[in-house]
Length: 320
Image (cartoon, rainbow, N blue to C red; front, side, top):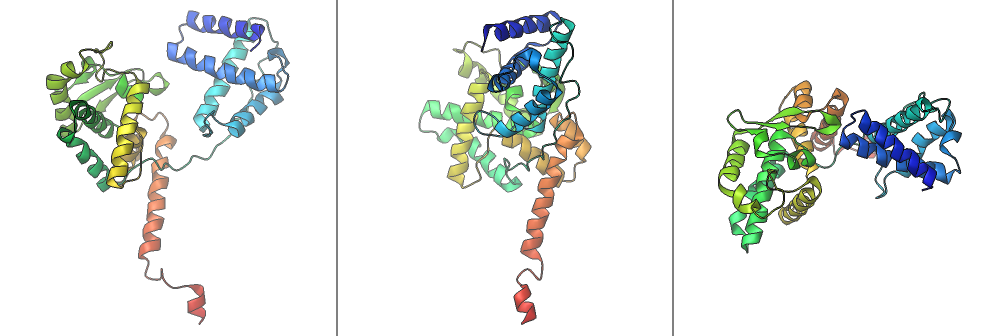
């Protein structure tokens, strides 16, 4: 990246910090701008050259190119890129470096939401969670500890619908086990919420805190955290253990986020009001929760295909 662009980003980040933007937001803005400047470089454009057509084109570029690992961006992720670019150009306009904000009138692209496949059915989830309760069968002390940690984290995620990064930031002080509540601070979108533990999850976490937390994490640099690790290493550990267990049990392989998806779907199937599910999962917009109704409809189609009395009758047979 050219020195002038680096300077613009640096000055913009200083501006954000001076205006009390949260650190997480500033870091996200920085990543978004690097992607924007990569787009401009491919087209031989300078920041001051961008017009509304190029601004709209950046959105299409994100949808077409996707992430570095090949996965597509969600509609929300693309919107965050555009929001960062819009904020950046508003800063440039205010500073007199451009005459207008080309991102002000960008029309939002609608990306069809993909039906989640990262979930287990109720019996499958029960089998997986039960497997983690048998942590005492590990071949070594280290193996037993890892399985026990997986047991506690998995029960917490499935009980509350937390994201792994939210669970990683928990401290013992965030828990009110008397009420069966875990307080999530600075969740996705900077929102905070209370998550409710099931009776079993509450007792699992209580036993962990009272008997094992100090023993397991006394050598770590951040023992103040409930699980003693940030989201990245904690997520990798959990995903590895879950993947191994799913394969051993012959279940579809899920990730840490699969506990959240599974909870949303299971609550819907149990008759829980979708508005309540949105609150439990911390969805700001109801449409994010409605994706589970699409999964339910797909399941209904499968049931119909499997159970309809005329499922074996073909058009050819009828004509004969």
